[in-house]
Amino acid sequence: MIKNNSTAKRGRPAKSGRDSNQTKQALVQSGVEYFTEFGFASSGIDLILKKVSVPKGSFYHYFASKEVFGIAVIEEYSRYFAKKLDIHLLNENNKPLIRITNFANEAKDGMARYNFKRGCLIGNLEQEVTLLPESHRLQLLTTLDDWQQKIARCLELAQHENSIPASLDCKALASFFWMGWEGAIAKSKLAKNLTPIDIFIDTFLQLIAK
Amino acid sequence: MIKNNSTAKRGRPAKSGRDSNQTKQALVQSGVEYFTEFGFASSGIDLILKKVSVPKGSFYHYFASKEVFGIAVIEEYSRYFAKKLDIHLLNENNKPLIRITNFANEAKDGMARYNFKRGCLIGNLEQEVTLLPESHRLQLLTTLDDWQQKIARCLELAQHENSIPASLDCKALASFFWMGWEGAIAKSKLAKNLTPIDIFIDTFLQLIAK
DNA sequence: CACTTTAATAGACGATCAGTCTAATATGTA
DNA sequence: TACATATTAGACTGATCGTCTATTAAAGTG
Image (cartoon, rainbow over all chains, first blue to last red; front, side):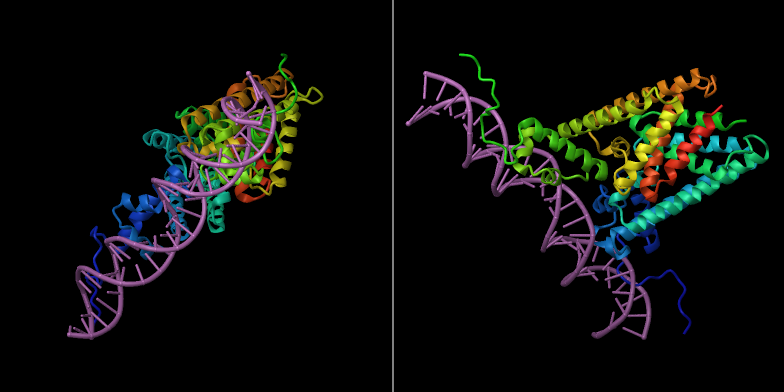
């Protein structure tokens, strides 16, 4: 007998009508939103579930624990953000430093759109690290390292076209960039306006310009 | 009858033997430590009390609420940190940029001494701002503004002695400095080493040097 | 010395909410 | 019909939170 390849599924059907992967993805997405706004420790599973109409009893059917769920959430955000970075930083229509500016502008839009309540998931969890499981800590480091490489490559391009001094160490400069960036996002959340991000980007570009 | 000016006190004596002000101060100090390590929301009053052997029932005798207590804690830390800043930034034995380096070195010592678990209270609460009462948010902004002025003045001195370009806006640069600083402290906590702080300070000084 | 005032403590209260688990339910397959 | 599988219902334990009220222990007062 040939295995039926149709979409027919065994078991009790999900209340929402979603299939298993969709439900999982919806939960992860909800987790991204809550963790970004309230952090890991202060986000309750209850609300995360409620937001996407998945009953509480189902959580441990989809994830083994809150920690494992957290890993999926961080991974999702990392992927999403890396993609956004690539769109700008690899855009050959623009010069390298313009690409960075464009990325910053998109991020600024996001900050304002969510009323300065969200910011960057990675930056937020970073501050919470003393409360986080070790698995999360390592994952955050890996993510930041990835982003750092993307910026470093863009800065190297700028260097090759002689927009910034050859004397600069682009790897160190990329690390410097992200520290300032996370600080700027945090300050922007605190001040509830975009001035900090503007100051950060403007100053950064001014300082490295040849 | 002349009022007795001795140390005799009414009321049930404190278990610890401390007087009211000492107890209050001890609680605030304990709060600084807990809030710096775990943030405001995740720090329980219970542990803060236990650390300085003040019984739980006494908390609301000394402070009207956790929020009011938080204000005292932030104020204490702000004062402590401002003093530390002044010691370095107003030290006329050193050139302005050396003063900044010295401040950074002392902070590095502190990070290592506490095993990268504490960092900066203000930076930590900053990330938590969505969970904080508005009074705390405003207080954090004021504190950062104060620190910013101190660094700005130091940078202006550097400018006057021609160590950094006259074209730089010292106020903006000071704001830039603190965003990067808070980001570097956070990254250092995450990585559990001092490399991020080194990269931040070295790069900052390199970029602004004439 | 009785009584009041003040300072500090003891201990419990109600609420919330975490993460988890077991039993029940709803479907497909044999 | 019986079983396998997928999902849900909902309660459970245990912690912990911030807060409050009654009580205790001292000093002042007349």
